[in-house]
Length: 204
Image (cartoon, rainbow, N blue to C red; front, side, top):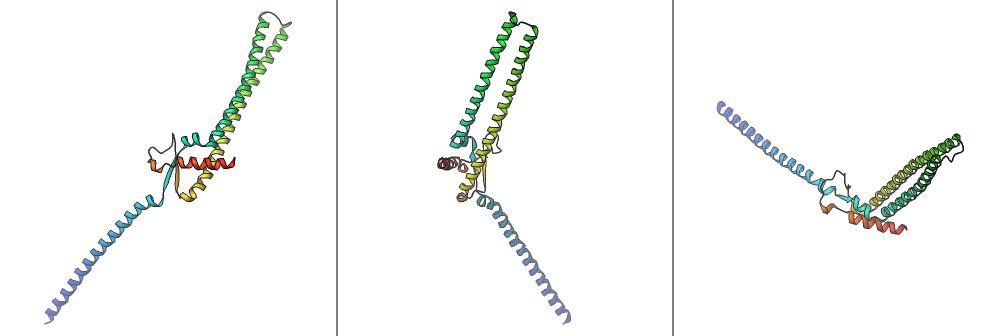
């Protein structure tokens, strides 16, 4: 009788162990399914939760009226600087030519007078080179300042535009950018140009 009870107890324990083992396997399987589902959801979230767009900067610069006006200002400054330099350069060239003619025909009364005139012309040439360097530097500084002004204006307007759109990132797609390929569906260049030009027209 005692041995029969012993066998019954061992059988019950064995069945309990088997049940626990089955439950453990079932629990792991469900946990794995939950984890896999969570992982799947995680991979899908960025595409839905982080909308992105891009702007073709080359097109924007060509069609944004503020950019066009700034470019015209720079061109006018370049033309003015070039005209000023060209006028002085031609004047110096005429004086050098006259000096050479006088030297060939012995028009200077003394050698000292010829050397004085030569020194004067050399000084004017140096001043002309300094003028060229100064005008070039000024144009570069003005161009840089206008580019910064243009960029600040675009960024400020994009922040206003994006309040309703909710883009997480707006890329710039232009020559040399890290974007090699982008679907046209993400291209908001036309919308941005229209938005910028309306705001710019309102400031005039």
